[in-house]
Image (cartoon, rainbow, N blue to C red):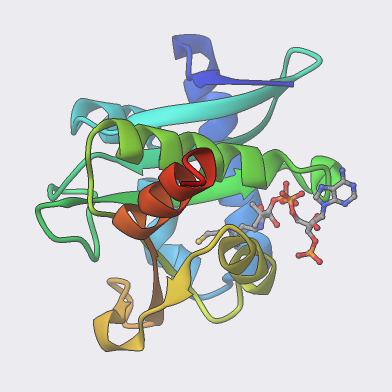
Length: 174
Ligand SMILES: CC(C)(COP(=O)(O)OP(=O)(O)OC[C@H]1O[C@@H](n2cnc3c(N)ncnc32)[C@H](O)[C@@H]1OP(=O)(O)O)[C@@H](O)C(=O)NCCC(=O)NCCS
């Protein structure tokens, strides 16, 4: 399994996978949101990075890395990056692909010197919330928002200044 930037021939497969996975979780909310979720090209055109996990030549999952405030940012300040539309094919869930995609976003945010990597998730996305907590994200209810349909968006954020200094501490035991 490799994680890499999406290729043009993968735009439609990832868009369809994202709609299919979200549809299982979000019934009515997706009515207004499906066209946004499907449109990978719009995310790229807005300056986001779209990463895919490819296994046996299939798109097994994907994520959108939003490098800063802009049309696809929902919850972030100037010095933060955001994770959006993380999905893994249900047939391949539970194999660490979601964690690998999220870690790829963490690496990008760290490389860009961002203070935090932040995201919004919906209450029903319980597997995602366990994953984010396991990777060190913390719940930030004071920054919660709503998606366009009005449904709640829960904020989670990973403090990259804290994680960087703890890693530096590990490497420098003095
Ligand atoms: C959230 C999501 C992306 C996670 O993807 P995933 O590839 O299953 O994630 P991981 O495999 O890294 O971790 C999920 C679970 O598998 C377990 N796991 C990880 N590697 C494993 C392995 N090699 N073998 C068995 N289990 C494993 C993890 O411990 C974790 O367990 P948990 O459910 O008890 O927390 C996926 O569930 C999904 O697409 N959900 C629907 C869309 C969604 O909610 N997106 C989030 C938007 S904010």
